[in-house]
Length: 300
Ligand code: ADP
Ligand code: MG
Image 1 (cartoon, rainbow, N blue to C red):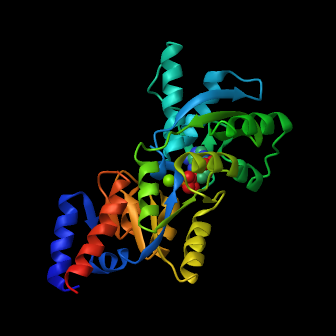
Image 2: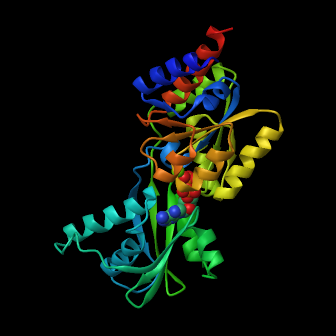
Image 3: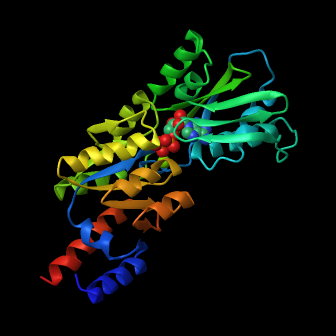
């Protein structure tokens, strides 16, 4: 496309809330044959809610919530926000202080796994099985049963370890964006296939994929694994778009022919992407591809 055509399309995109960084993404988007969608915060609303809290150790529920939410307080992850919100809500219900959070030290993010930190005198880990296994925290059958029961209900479970013992868990729901199913089916009508990739577990991921009409799922994938999947698809000769919102999606956003970030996503994802979907609406994946098609075919 001519520089003028790119400028016109970029301007048109911007006015529709599709921010295109440079001409290269615009020129590639019309070739896309596969769209890889991240799950949490991309296909789903990304405002997950805690629907159940379970304790496995003998400790007070508020103490458990304080430790978990202190560890999560600095995380940008939607699951972290759900846990912090839930802790605040329960504090209100119990009539205790609601906005004073316990402090965390040595806070660390483990992308695609969870967070860790020291809260008071305890080492607190909040995240999935992978995080617990990596830290040699044993997961007993009672915990396994709670987790698998909830995963079958499309819920994501977050485990909380205090001093290397599973102290409790949260079951969290995160509904699909209302347009998600429509976008997947419209892409199919454009001969573009949709794939879901997620760091979340296989059981929850499969349930969500089924709801949205996506047949190919890759679950329990870490950030590097997401990028590798994108490259594997590219090796099959397919032009690949990646749509994501998280730090964990950044390597895949960079690897993809066209990286698209959800506007409400983390800064790191927005920086890594070629296109930013300001309105957080998945329909704009189609808007971007359409804009590219029109720009390239107009000048030929
Ligand atoms: P997605 O790929 O669906 O956006 P992520 O890769 O961000 O998911 O996270 C994958 C999994 O890692 C989550 O389902 C959760 O189990 C765990 N996880 C990541 N970050 C956190 C966090 N801050 N708190 C709890 N769990 C987390
Ligand atoms: Mg995400």
